[in-house]
Structures are given as structure tokens and as C-alpha cells.
Length: 241
Image 1 (cartoon, rainbow, N blue to C red):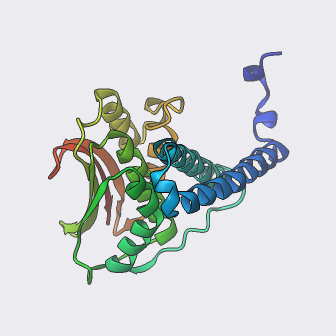
Image 2 (image 1 turned 45 degrees about the vertical axis):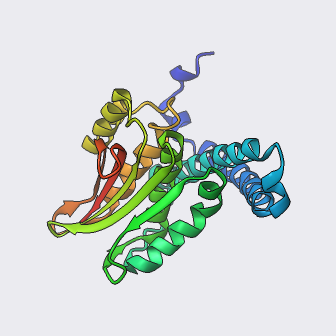
């Protein structure tokens, strides 16, 4: 039987939604435990001299990427399912926000010898949902790890009454396919985003949806991908009104 020929009632089955969400949640919990275990092993002094250290660092990168994808799946499930996502924007101080982002990515960046530069006014504040935006920037950093040579830059500034958060790397830049997918997600064309592509599908779509949740005086947030920036490589740009 062709699953694509199912009825609308089957597609909208709350039992199916609940089963998929429960399965994804269990997987996320298990992978989170694996991430924590790898991080503890990598910060151990003896581990840094072990021959398997580079492989362990790569395992951490892959498990974090998978964990981020599952978190994004759960968030999107809450968007399209019956429960509403607990959107909770508050005034955020940029110095605290950067500290949170840095802490969540420190072990991965250090294990891969990637320098992390920050350009931000620490006293600047803005109104947004911290958990969601930390997740978006964490995904962007994890993606930049794949493309960078040895440096990632987090730059936060206010441009035309809009908070602009940039994650830049010093790699070769994004392939044209990724730039095209980014433009599709930014314009709201879901069909233009390939969910089969790990680095540009779910994560970029999730980031675009989170950005759009943030609205102010008729404007909403947006994301885009570009090449160039201060480091000359790929740039993920999140704009919040």
C-alpha cells in the first residue's frame, strides 16, 4: 500500500503525531547523554594525547548536529501539531547571550582547534526568545564548523533598528545550492528547501520559522546565507526587528 495515498484523516492523526514526537524525544535524550559523555572525555587531559582524539571530536560534531536536528523537529512538531510552541521573548543582554552561546559550543570548537571571535557591544540589549535564538545560532555555528578552516566569528550589531546576528567563517564559502536553499527559506518557499540535505534543510527551515516568530510594528525576522563577511567565507545572518 502506498503511504502517499493515505487519507487526510490519517495525515492528521493525533496518535501519529504523538508517536513521532515521543520517538524523536527519546532519541534526543539518548543523544544528549552521548554528547555530554563525549564532552567530558574530550576535556580530560589524557584524552587530548590519545590517538583517537580527532575521531572523538568528529563524533561530538556529528552527535551535536543530530541532536540539534531532533530539537528542531520537536519544535516544528509543536508548530504544526495541536500544542502551541511556548514562545517566550524577553529582554536579553548581549553579554549574557554570548556567554551562553560560547559555553554551549566551547568544547566542540576547542577540540577542533577552531578560534572563536566575538564582536559585540556587551551592554546592548534586545527583545527575543533566548532559548530559540540560542538554538538557531548554535546550529549556525555547528554548520560553520563543517566549512571553516580554523576560525568562526560571531558578530552582533544593530542595523536600521534591527538586531543583526552574524556567524561567519574563513572557509571557501557556501556552495551555490546552499545559497539557493537559503533564499527559498527566507522567502517562505517551503518547496525550495530540501529536507534531504542535512545542512540546509531542517535546520535552515527551523531558523527561518523562528525568525518569523519575532515581530515588531509590522516587521518580522529573517535569515539569509551569503558569502564574504569579515573572514571571507560563509555567513549566516539572522535579523530580528
